[in-house]
Length: 110
Image (cartoon, rainbow, N blue to C red; front, side, top):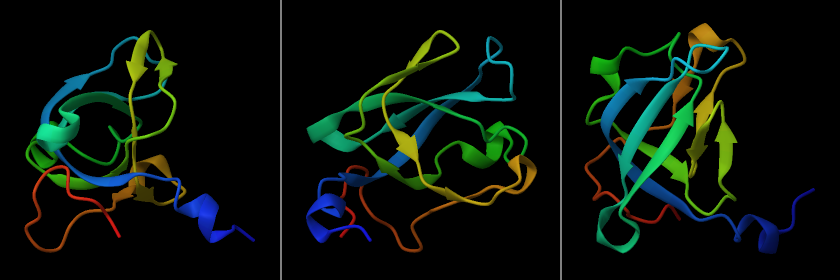
């Protein structure tokens, strides 16, 4: 059981993916994403293992839900500064958590 206070520590935001690049240094198929979180947070680099499920074109300009207050983690030489939320157990059938109506980049998830 997770206490509400622990859940409340997560800073979940709407991020808009503005650039998608191959992360050739990773041993698994990954992308290096540039994600815009608006004026308050700015842009962040996020490394994501979603290459088997999404093309670059599908991801560009997509608004997704991200955790922005995780400690950065270096993945195959690139610092990842957040995490995309996604569903699925199989790397080839990942489904990103997206926004069903227009929301500004950086908007808080409540």
